[in-house]
Length: 400
Image (cartoon, rainbow, N blue to C red):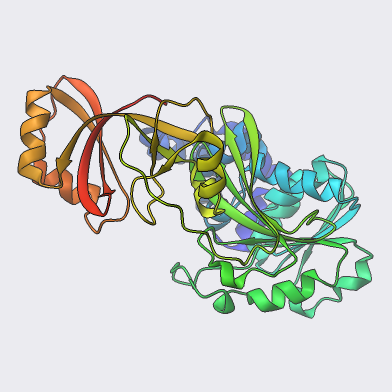
């Protein structure tokens, strides 16, 4: 779909066409296409409308019912911030006393929607013509949100009178390959940080796996997870960085939990924790806590310890916490497929989840070696990990 076709789709006639299309079902595409073309709509516009219908269904995962009235591009939807996470960004800027934010490289406008929804004035800048059209349509309900189609590097950003800036550097190549080096992002992380420091408050969305060495000393860096899935990290500067450090925000089942992992410069390395003998329970902290370097603080709070040096699985007695997943240890086995298979058969295990840390063995490869067949039976979890420095397969039952 090109920008001219998308422009037709967001016009009144295009919106009327979208209103004629039921929720996307692949089996109805051919018959629906024929009917719409017989009604006089061009093949290009019909194809664009059906694509939009499919993207709206897919967009419900990130935007809920709002997706039914939004305009998407395929790449824009994939890269867009979930609405629940964008709301966190908006709230932090509100708490930093920001009033006008520049969303540089706004994509389809996901973060700008959240900024506008909390009463911030928004200037959204997007270089790609097609994506800018989508952002303009999505922000139409907010008259104080303006979308500018331009290369942000050629715009006088200080001319807008904004007191905050939000940046989401492009972290993939044109072919979709992830760029691990922050200095290969567009803009480079060093350039984004320089720009951020020119505004009273700023947030820079970065890859969750970013090395601590790239984090600025006086920033606050926050990792966010949604239902145990790590989705992003953000470098906050200026008044949006209330105190330097690292933290985790956990969104799960409608609840928002903030965990302070490290106070002080966020670029300090994680401190090593002494392991402990495997106890009756094994725990996996939320991935946002792991990436924020909060294992030591969490282990200290709950009287837990790692199962081996440098491993994020913790062990100890039974504890209740929504900051981690709990597994009751049933049996500790050598990391040998034949030995494990015998025990699974003996225990009548029919459903097996396989997890791993600290080993090159992949769950899919190990599952193939087990030769498991679909059958009724008890559910269990197999955890492949070093225990006291030796590779083990822990058969366990998930309790949370």
